[in-house]
Image (cartoon, rainbow, N blue to C red; front, top):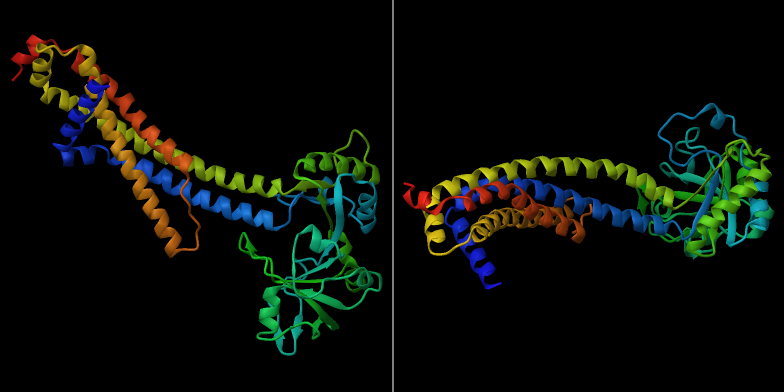
Length: 413
């Protein structure tokens, strides 16, 4: 161990003696490691934000819809011909699905046909407000809280009452410095009484989840019968570990309910919160690949530079190698010395790259809305890789130094 430490100090001294040359040699390593750390930190920060947003949607949620929630391809003919879901489907699931705490259905006003529905209070109009027809259990399935007033009730649904619950963005836009509860707003030409305001739920993927208005599902059907084509069903599993079992059971119930034969594909989509994460991971997977390619190229360039400078170092220090061998240094000692020198060189470059990447991540956090947090596994992986580059590209120069004949080395000018 003492010999190892002495060789390490000797290697560090040789590097310090050629500061500029050493810095230029590891520049590729620094750039590669810095790129990986910066991208990894940004993605790690985004992962945390996405994970929190998905959790804020509600826990243990399983959804049923007519079409895929995330589909970057054109709809197939089979998907276009699918029969719409109905409120009756939600009722069947409510009675037959086990390991489910509650089931709720939603009618979503067609965003394509009504991109900016006419919602206003006096002369103040809401901008891009989304209208949902829901049942009372919606607030429990999606784990939302009422800020003031109340949420929709069974009586509201049974009597198709003209009442609304509004999101915090709608409240701030239409009722600044006022309590909206008890006031009336217009949705198209119909008057609705505001009975409640939800707590802020935040944004997700840039989508404002508070710019919503919720009305009884039956009232939505009365005003817009065509909205039945956008029925979605959501349910909350009793426990997280029950989600796969609930998905299988719901699939079986819906296939039976929609009379899908055994040799046909599902005419509906069943998913969970994992869909969001899968979709997000597909997006970030390409970014990780780009980061690895950039790092690989930069590290390769840095590794070649290390090999080149170590070969030069062996030539410059031929007499030193001869002297060391003449006074008893073994071939193994010379090999370890030059390998350590290469590893210290690239390890230092890796450490500098990590610090620069972390510094840039902090600046991004301070100066932009992009989240960034240090990813410890990537820091360890980046440093280990940089040291490994020195080991790999230092083998040939070290072996060449170790093979030098001491007599020939002493004669070298």
